[in-house]
Image (cartoon, rainbow, N blue to C red):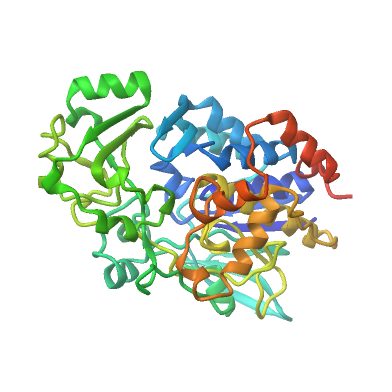
Length: 428
C-alpha cells in the first residue's frame, strides 16, 4: 500500500496531496506545523493574472483542476485589470482554506495540523520516517518537501527588518523546518539585485473597518482602488526588495493600489503606518497582516532545494520530491500548485515503482519548470524571481508564443502533447 507523506500544507503541499491520491497512492498524509492549511495563501488571493491564466488552464486540461475550481468558485472579483496585470481573479481569503481542507478530506487525504517535523530517520539512501516535535514517528514510502522558504525569525531578522508577526506565525508554531535540509541535501538561498539574501513578501493586508467607507464601497464594487501617493511619500527604492517582482513597477510606488480579497490587499511590501495614514481615506488604517507591517514583511527564499525537472530532490536520498518555493524562485499560488502537483504525482509514481513524468516545454508549465531550474544554476539567475504573471518568465511565455487566454487552444496544446487528464488518472 503506497504511502506518501507531504510536509507542509501550503498551496504546494495541498496540490501534492491531491495529485498523489489521484495517481493511486493508497495513503496520503499532510503534516502542517500551524493550525490551518494554505500558508501565504491565507493572505494572497490573486489568480489568473497575465500568464497565470494560461498555466491554470493547462493544469485543468492536464487533470489537475480541483484547486483552480475552488479558487474560481470563491472569487469575489473576476477579470480585474490593474497596473501591469490583466484579467486577474481575486479569491476570498476568508473562504478559501475551509474549502480546500474539505476537498482534501473528500479525496481521502489525511491532514495533521500543528504537526511540526523536526527530525528524520534515514536508511539505505532513503528517508524512512519523519519525527514530529512531540516525538511521534510517521513512516512513508516517499516524501514531498513543501515546507516553503518563509522565515525563520532569525532569517527575517538577519536579512530583513526582524520578525513582523506575519501569517507564518513562527513565535506560535515554531519556525519552518526544511525536510530537504534534514536529509542533508545542499540548499541555496535566493538573492536580491544588490546581492543580499532573500526577498520580502510583496503585499500587506489592511483591516476593512479601518478604511474610509467610500473606499470600501468602491473596492467591493470594482475589486480595485488606486489612490495617488502623496509626492513626499513616494519611495521607489522599496520596489527592489519585493519577492513579487511582477509588481515592482513605478505605478506601485507612485500610488497606493488596493485589491479586494475579503481583506484589503495593499500592494506594497510595507509602508510605515504613520505615512500610510497620510493618504486620504486611510487616516485610520490598521495592518491586518503582518501586524508589524510598519517595518516590513516576511523574508522568503531562505532555502531552495536542488531538484530535477520531475521535482525529485537531488542529494543523499532518492525518495524525496519538492514543490512550491522549495522548488525554486517561483512566486505565487499558481506556481505552487503547478510544482506541487507534479511533485505529488511523481511521488506516487515512485512509490508504485514507475518512472517519473516530466512535462514537455511545449507547455508553459513544463517550460517554466525547466527554465527556472536552469536559470538558478547561475548566480545571475539566483537574483531573479519567476512567475507566470510578470517579469522574466512571463516575458519568456510571450516570446515563445505560449501565453493565451483561449481555453480551447490550451486544451488542444495539452492534447497534442498526449497528456490530457494525466493527473486525474491512477498510474497504471
